[in-house]
Each structure stands twice: as structure tokens, then as C-alpha cells.
Amino acid sequence: MNNSINWILIITGAVAIVGEVILGAVTGFDLALLGLSLAVGGAIGLAFGSAEVGLFSAGAFAFIYLAFLRRRVRSKLTGPNRATNVDAVIGKRGMVTEPIAPHGAGMVKVGDELWRAELAEKGDGVAAIPPGATVVVDSVEGVTLRVRTGT
Image 1 (cartoon, rainbow, N blue to C red):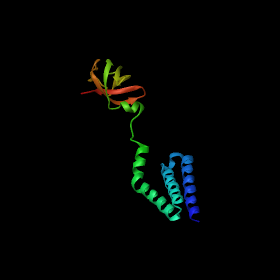
Image 2 (spheres, rainbow, N blue to C red):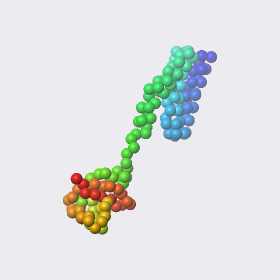
Image 3 (cartoon, rainbow, N blue to C red):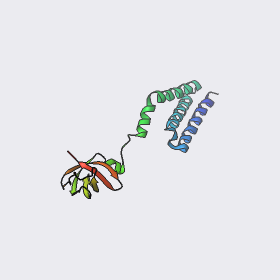
Image 4 (tube, rainbow, N blue to C red):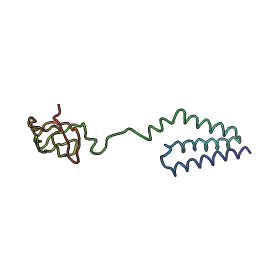
């Protein structure tokens, strides 16, 4: 009887791990790690020939994961939110390579990339930005950057 409880722990743990694989990341890796806790607890119980040791160790591993490691595992899985693609250039500085007229477009180099650029503020009192000037990207519309003079 002692070994049957340990085998139930191992099988239940294996089913939980397989369930995590089938479901994907829906459970946030919790099902796999709790399944691992059950399986390892059952294996320890088999090694000691005791159902009590198996149940206690499975419960202890599950508690340790839920109480201390879950937040850390979740933060590693999600990672920081970073701007990607064209949103990554917003706020960056660039250098004008072709003049940007008040009512026209020029070219700006941001990092290693050349972009079509227009002034973010348009109007009669706005001056053109000459080549070599530093600009800051305010927004992106399609493949055109909206820029303002950088300080």
C-alpha cells in the first residue's frame, strides 16, 4: 500500500507535466512545476519506502514553489515590456542627413537606419532643419518619423 501512494504521486505529477505541455503557457508553467513536485515527492517516497515521506516531500516542494519561487519564475517567463519595431525609435535622437523643410520631408539617421522625416510641428514660423542637426523622434506615421529639434 505504501508504494501505491508514491506511484499515484508520480503518475499524477507526470499527467500534470503532460497537461502543461498540451496546454502550452496558459498555466504560466505552474502545472509543470507542481507536477514535478508531486513526481519528485513520489520518487523520494519510493526511495524511502514510505508513503508519509512521499506525501510530505511532495507537499513541501509544492509549498516551497508556491511560497517562494513562483513570482521569480513568472517574472523570468514574462520579461520586461520593450518597444519593438518602429515604436523603438520614439524618443531617440537622430542626425539630419537631408534638410527637413517646414512643409516637406527630409532624411534622418537614427542608430544605423535612415528614415524619411517630417517636422512634428508645422507652420509658417517653423524653420527648416539643416543637415547635421540633432533631432528627437516624437512619433511614427507609416514609414515617416515626426521629429523636433533636439537639444
